[in-house]
Image 1 (cartoon, helix red, strand yellow):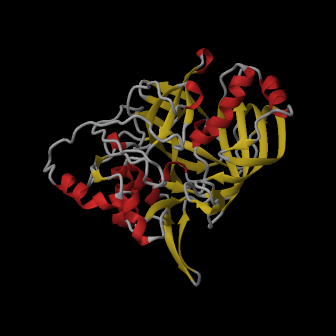
Image 2 (image 1 turned 60 degrees about the vertical axis):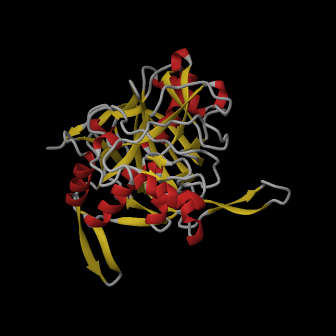
Image 3 (image 1 turned 180 degrees about the horizontal axis):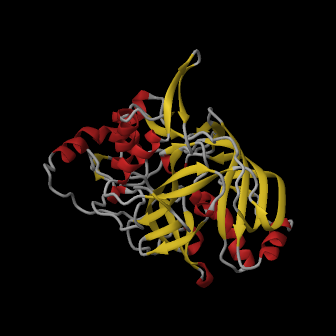
Length: 403
């Protein structure tokens, strides 16, 4: 099977054929996805089992510059992750989207992190060498691992920015800090938007948000679980995400701040954030107040064909390597630049599927990322829901232009 997007890349147990979508998009300008990256390799072998890997690799090699056949199989394995994305939530227009990474984008990022001397961590998806081929040719070539940009939280900073907002502070434990499989250390903006969207439905109003962190501690191990398939349940591990504990400052803005605050203070308010559990929850309405000290994410706007090249350049220029007795470390000399997942671009038209979540139409979605910079609160830290054609997600309200 010749593939661009591989559902089994992280979880080889899924009984799901790969996708081959040569052209994807478009999405809002300046966002990183397969249509805005110059890849050294676009097509990969993704057979249904490891025994067919040789034949699949020969099929890829035989392309010789020709476009492969477009292929988007229907969802066949109900265990695949699905996220309900709103296109028009007031009309209950949602799509059950199964996230699927573009193998060429992940491989290009894997190579450029090393080539551009950027800070990264190796995330071991499959430690068993004999099982690499079960995931795909990509994981076979990368020896069972992905490289993730390391994005430590910079120290909280005061800001002169003032405004009216709802301030929510809490601690989230075991939250997903690896949205999109390209960076680790922060919850994805799209995951934050999922929390905010629950409030939108409860209050009936559109809500903008700014996400700030005061600290983050990543869990370097894997989460234990139980594999109950078959007659004898046995211990298992979850490797689909990098998790951690974070101290969050979330600012919210809507047309009725008091309603938002009362909804958050209610017993049935959302208590899950980026897949983690929420603790020590505090809510307050602030009028003409300074934003609390924290490190916020600001959307950077780039006007380049290869957004990944722009991302590498901005990340490299935001810090420098230092050598000490404890080894080498990347020290930001200004607000650290990084990537965050902001949404999905649909790979096909949504359609009926027996495995679709909630009876909604189902579609496959490729992760879309934005270049962001850590810093004190400002107008460029506000985000809002955005749906435009094939893109469903979030975008910055006032992006900072990068020349």
